[in-house]
Length: 452
View 1 (tube, rainbow, N blue to C red):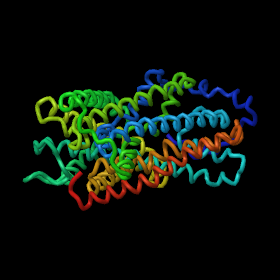
View 2 (view 1 turned 90 degrees about the vertical axis):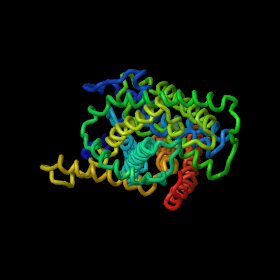
View 3 (view 1 turned 90 degrees about the horizontal axis):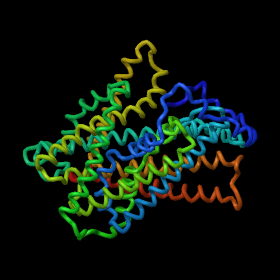
View 4 (view 1 turned 180 degrees about the horizontal axis):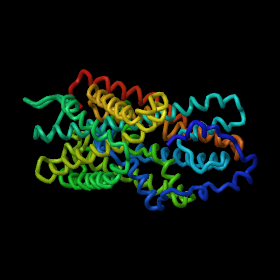
């Protein structure tokens, strides 16, 4: 949660390294439920492995396996390192400001407010709002993809067809109508104001995703045991579509700061992040590769569409619909509360609950409208990955780190820390610009072509 406005006047209380080291932020974290090392690793994995992994086979199809596998590993590693830098900077800022917790946006704002060249401090709130807006676009965008996955899976079950497209089967409505019909149901689950009523279902949702990974490997060895027909490379556009979808599937950028803030022993966070991200890279690579090998050019998003229409897979598809419907409510909770923090101060304080419900319905309706206009899972995931997550996982952490390291420990021999961050920011900028353009083009095509 964002720091209260009156608490956001960040000041540097540590003028030397000794003063910085003297503050133990972990001891100040009292009166809160703390998470074990294993639990924190699980939360990192759960923060990434949601609906995005269900489109992994299509992502590999777009790039070709010879390009997709190394890029999958490379960007997973880049994101892990970016998040490591972010949390390391957070720890330094907590020691300097004498705070026991900072949010992602707090880190961005504090990094500029504490920077020795005070001319940059006036941009601190702008940087904060940019971070908050990016987090909201990412998580609301993920809600939009969940709506499409649920509607598309439901459409296949109703039509009883082996594949499905945006256009309806003979005698059935298009995917857009299914999205419109489901919109009131998504509004209902997002009216739940307290996370405690939704959180228990996250474990069941993760069980469904884990089962889908195992089923994908099973169908690979059933349909294509010799791994024949795999395309090795494709083209420029396909590569950037893959990068966006891959980054979307692997990102836990919105949760890592909070996970560190709730760890019983935050000194072990780096190890926790390494284990968590290694597991994420392993799961996304395995699912995407085996899913593509199983279904080849017929791979769809979500890949559960490719499962046969027999009793057990049909039950599983229905389970996917149910679990992602609940996950939508979980995913909506964080960005809405971030927006509500800024909205509620402008409303009648005696009718806040009434207005909160109105705005919840309004936000879900806007999300659903985007899905109805652009009902393409892959294009939306690619766009969110390039536009939002390139910033959240690569660019912003390196910018924050540059500001934090300026005073202590400095940029090092030959300014190597500057060159390190310039490299990662450049990679992120290429993904942000080229990837966003390619995926935006794909999204616009959906308006005129009724096929995924």
